[in-house]
Length: 104
Image 1 (cartoon, rainbow, N blue to C red):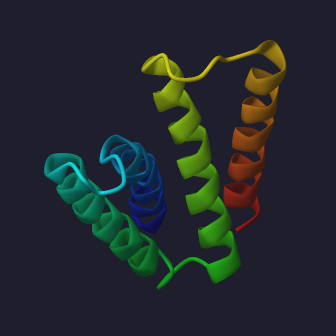
Image 2 (image 1 turned 30 degrees about the vertical axis):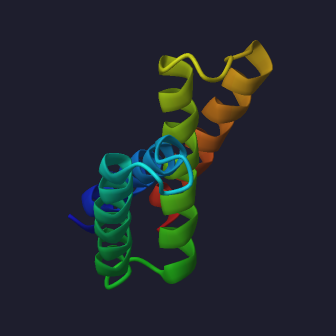
């Protein structure tokens, strides 16, 4: 269950990153509220996962999932381009995250 919470927390990292951008420097209240809620839930999930998963592994997975999800979200929203090299690097990153799970 810790791994499910950790991955969900990483996905929430992408939500709060996108909300932070949409808040325009915290001047728009709805994205700002979403940012605060998503960030609190993301950090809470990370803390909970660290009760059973080693800190270094949990943090690396959390950041990695968040980074990949953020890129995917921005590509889906049309704010970033996905090149072949970038896609391969993201796949490599996901492979590394899976590897961390396998050796934990």
